[in-house]
Length: 318
Ligand code: NAD
Ligand code: SER
Image (cartoon, rainbow, N blue to C red; front, top):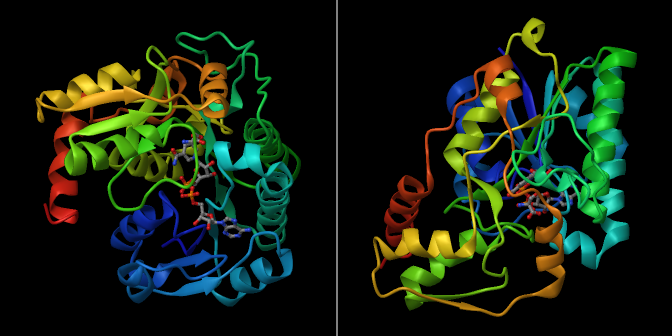
């Protein structure tokens, strides 16, 4: 049985992945960690071990890995795209030095490492449609720069030191448990909250801006599936394109209108997040993930919308 440490466990992905992994591998085998305790995570904190770990502190990371005999690190602690543009030095420190510390501990202690890359690893010069697995990667955000460097660093630790590194390039994730942590795709989460509360939403991303997206249950499945994939079948490792759907704001609004006909969409475009979105692909080609480890998403836009609205109605007590 694996003994897993999750960094950044109280974020959008970690708060759900921790519970999923505790169901699969057992509560005693999944240690959650974060830089600090946050409100609203009682279930996660009470359902297993929790440690305070700032990933910029390699010594503390190493202590926790040794203390719990960890053999797999799922590294989620990061600064996302929009916050990264506001605080580039912080993004570099957390995303690069944090990953370096994780890989060093993994090398010393013989751990496997899973860490997500992003659609942000692509830039203006990348082919926009059906973006290939192997293509030009020259992003123009600090977040994207750290994601490309991170992919390369993970490959380096695999080839040089034999560390079992694996990753996916996640699209924008949509979920109802924990709000996203300051990215460009966050509009596609906020829209559901406002649709239910106000029957309208003001989008900071403009009409016609397509981005890849995915519902959280599919992302959790992808992470577990790649973690357990037969290494002999993996040609790529860091990191696989994966996607479930690609839409622009008018399309998600139309999907919501099928459930809430009076829903209205307005636009107040944020130039910083719009420029980031414009530099990312319209749609990814995820053939390599499908062929090498059987990736196959379950949700499309309309089935995600129905589930999001149902779960959020319950969560918000509406
Ligand atoms: P998030 O911002 O919701 O969570 C990240 C967590 O890391 C936060 O709880 C934050 O407090 C914590 N953190 C920040 N600095 C830290 C530090 N120094 N030490 C320890 N913890 C620290 O992000 P997320 O959406 O859960 O993303 C997890 C990973 O997935 C990131 O690598 C992100 O780039 C990637 N990703 C996410 C998405 C998405 O749409 N959510 C898309 C593509 C890639
Ligand atoms: N959802 C993330 C962001 O917008 C993509 O990596 O930053």
